[in-house]
Amino acid sequence: MPRGTHPNSLAAIKPHSFRPGQSGNPGGRNKKRPITDEYFALADVEVPKEVCKALKIKYVPGRTFSQANALTRFMDALRKDGHLASKEIREAMEGKAPQRLGISGPERKEITIRVVHEKK
Image (cartoon, rainbow, N blue to C red; front, side):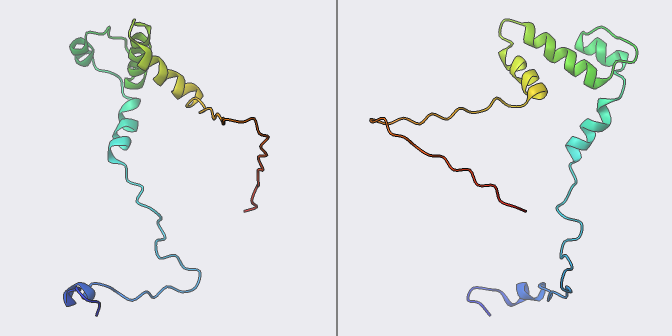
């Protein structure tokens, strides 16, 4: 028994009885995402009149929560301080902007970059 290990903690460990090629975790990682799942469920639900009234937005029959959210982000982007909303919209549509890499030093030297593609 390893030093500092309580004997009862070892009792919970079961020996592996996996056959060769059998996964010990056949379901993979836990795919539960409760908050994200709720977002997906609510996205296509029509916004009730009461919610529109509380948010002080015009009720439009059939407008979903995802449509109302997109409209709100676009309206935020049009404001003077709407750069964060504009960035969110652009990144949702085009992806994040690529990061630029600059290489500099005290001397001008030639560098060689080698790209290796590995076969899978």
